[in-house]
Structure formats: structure tokens, C-alpha cells
Length: 217
Picture 1 (tube, rainbow, N blue to C red):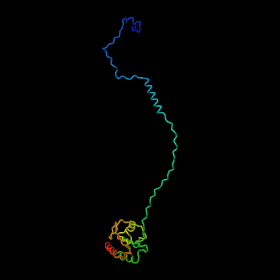
Picture 2: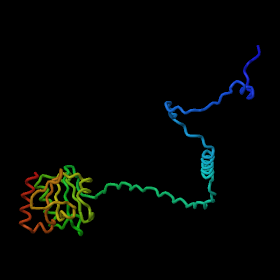
Picture 3: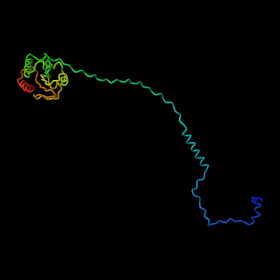
Picture 4: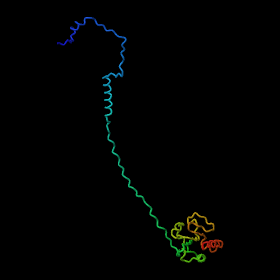
């Protein structure tokens, strides 16, 4: 059987002889499309692409790098070695006696080893009064070691008792005050008196000295 379908316009007019009218149906509502997507505009895309291309070209462009000046080389200062002060050797002293009982006797006479004849005789009476012999004490003439302080003397002699004739507190750099009484400075008992030669003729000073000597016997 032959196919009866045809697309020929002249043939179709033989079957559809009546006029056809298009009438608008107001009862039918045509809803708008939801989620309408923007229409693709080729011109906009071309414009955006052109801008991106321009940006890319600007980023890619690298400014010309000019050669920098050669850095200056400064000579290195030689390192100065740290100088460590060498510890000083303890001061030594030339003295008379044996110092077995750690009794230091200071005199201050620039003309004699100990004192004048009157001064030496007075000293013999003093050491006898406190039951000391020559091996028990040390006699040091301070005039040969001016500027020596108490600490230096103590480090060498380790005196338990010190009798100072003509050597004052200021000479030994002690922050003390002599009030005619025995001074206890650390482990040392100290008695100050005038120079032996002058002490021999000073009755008041001799009485004070005798009173203090009785306390250290």
C-alpha cells in the first residue's frame, strides 16, 4: 500500500478548502518561564575576554631591571681579645717575731726599725704584761708599707689581736670609730694607741692602754 502522507502544498489544498481563522483564547493563561537564564551575548563575552587579556598582558610585563652598584666591601676590624686581669699575688711583709699566737703589733716609725729606745722599752713591758714572748707575736713597721689596708694585713697575718701604735683607723681604711675601747672587727680585737715614743710620756694614754690590755689577757 502506498504511503498516503504528503507534504505537497497543492495536494493539501484539495482537502482543506475552508478558510481557517486564528482566535485568541482569553481563558488560557500562559505562565512566564521560571529561572530564566540570561541570554548569551557573544559581544559581552568578547569584551570580557579582551579585558582579561589586557590584564594578563599588564601582569606579564616585567620592568627592566637596572644593574645595581657593586656593594662596597669594608675591611673587617680585627677582634680585640678580652684582657683578663691576672690575679694579684698576696702582699708579703717583713716582720719581727714568730706570730704563733696571731698577735699583730703595728708600729709607725720612719727612722727606726721599731721605735726609739724609750719606745722599745715600753713595748717590752707591754708584751710582758699580756704574757707574750717573741715567738708569739709579729711586729710590723707600717711606715714601710704605707697605703696597706686592714684586709691586706689580715690576709697575711690572720691576727686574733692587733695592737696599733701610731697607725690610725683611717690608714687601715676601716669604717670604725675609736672611743678608747677595744674594737671587735670580725674575728680580730683591735686596740689603738699613740706612737710608742709619744706614748711613753703620755700618762693618760698609758692608763687607757693598760686597762684594755687586761681585757685581752
